[in-house]
Length: 184
Image (cartoon, rainbow, N blue to C red; front, side, top):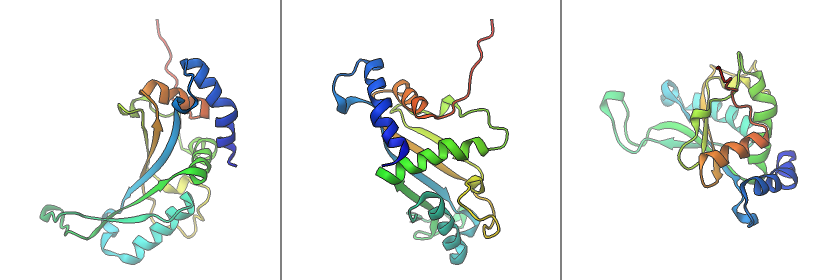
């Protein structure tokens, strides 16, 4: 069992249930999946570069990304229907908890000038989105074999009633949110 999942089941879930006054175990907020999206931009026409980037993402995430194709043609962007436009991975279960644990404990502290994650990235459903501008911050990658640094978006999908509950869940899991100092 993943270290973070074990911590969730033994410590976080009971604490959340007590804090929020939830009696039913199934109503306690939890992370259901993590979705990672990355646009491929200028490498869209180079199949080899797309495959290399997909391999790099699979090393980071532990799962091969799906290549997403354009649904419609857009002449202004020189884009035709069916052309590859991005990569997508949905993590659930063991891989999800392992990735989230590595993200929280190893990767985020390695970011340059990191002062915490913004609290403005929650949507109305309580899901949290993080933008990573450089995928080379992940220690799983061999920097000698990595091409150009690329960015991607990580969406942590939670089962909660509102963003407040999601924020508390992620705080208890160890997510480093920015600290706001009250000035009086």
